[in-house]
Length: 613
Image (tube, rainbow, N blue to C red; front, side, top):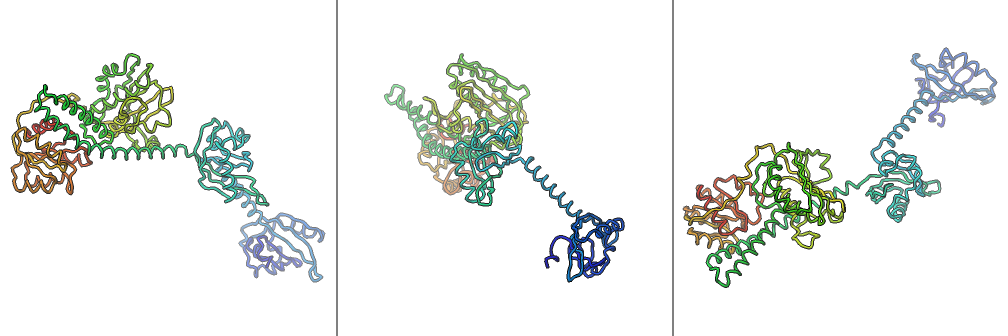
């Protein structure tokens, strides 16, 4: 059984005949065991090696010897190169010859395969884009691949082999914990550590490794793969910050919505009282103070809505260079004489589609922010350029998207922003200044996001800060910016029937008072269903004013139902927190949108405009 199953050919010769051959020998030369038994040995030896065979086998029978020759395959076409070791013994007083046969070609092929595999393993180790290493248990570096050399900042592999991994730990207790874990389990998978490169740069890494042990079970070496997670961690942190800003934006928008309803009532009724109060009245100045304070509060909610990207904007196509030149003189006065203003504007810069007033505010806010960072003076540089972002360039910023952009770069030589707060600078009400609301950069963030772009910031302490604003490039024709400017108007006495649908009783009463005092006939409803019922009972309404956010059915749904009953009615939608349905408003003929809070004069102006269409 042993001879039958060993992976080496074996035969027994009695005289010149084969008395036994095992399975492996038969496999080598293509015979069945029954067929080969009794054959003469000459039938199996290649003719060119027969004399060599005779000479060796006629040697003294007590002498062991190994030699190489070729056997004939059964098909008589092939030769099988083998190594034979012969021995002579006696069995039942009869001399017999024993021989083992090894297929040289097979061994060489196996050796070639092993060498090839070793080459592949060596190539895998050397060419891998993952840092791979082998270290002793006491920290000596035994082997590293080029990627590990690069990751840890060494000039060469030889330099790295002279080092000890303990020098790359931020805290040696981390090394002790790592050793305990890997020796207890035999391996670690995705084990996270903070390590130091040769130049002191900190790296967040993930280690997958196994332990090599001696016969006594003692750890003698560790081998594994190190992945640099530093950039991945930064992306995760930016994504968390992005999600945080989105949540803050929704919260700010919700607060602004409710606050705008309150301010609409305060501003509106105060303006009405001011109209009815003479300047010499002792309460006139107090009413004026209330009105002015409410206007400031309205400005604050407007800024919150800008940050939350919920403020209605008027977009148009314009050239950034034209806008910057237009506000250049004002910028120079705003930043003061101690700060030098340099403009580097690419004359081939693409136009953008945005609100020019808001982009002007972005540039102004960034300039004023730079001024505060340079109390002793310095240089402010504003430049424009065309930029095309690839997919690979957007992976570190979850807010960025590939495409063509027009970039505004605002750089200063100021004090810089500390690394620990740089991710918070766009949060509303976050500020390090003694004065200010902390909404300046929040407004910048909101405007840029609402314009379809994103903003990056780079800063070093005492070296300055650079803001890069990316706004999608537009290929449409440039519009006339001057047509966006407001003009003062005089409002005539109103005429017509108006239906007001508003769920806030205070706002509803304010609008009713303003309209009735201006000559309009007014009906009111607290929800859409009630408003539809009123129109069905009397179809002679000239204008519908409806809040966007209503119980049960929203303002857009209410308006569409009323249009079925009264197709010629004109519509003004109002809201303190515009929803994503704003764009659908402009699909309705003879409809406009007003942002809360608004004053009586602003409301009457827009009513007059829409009724004249």
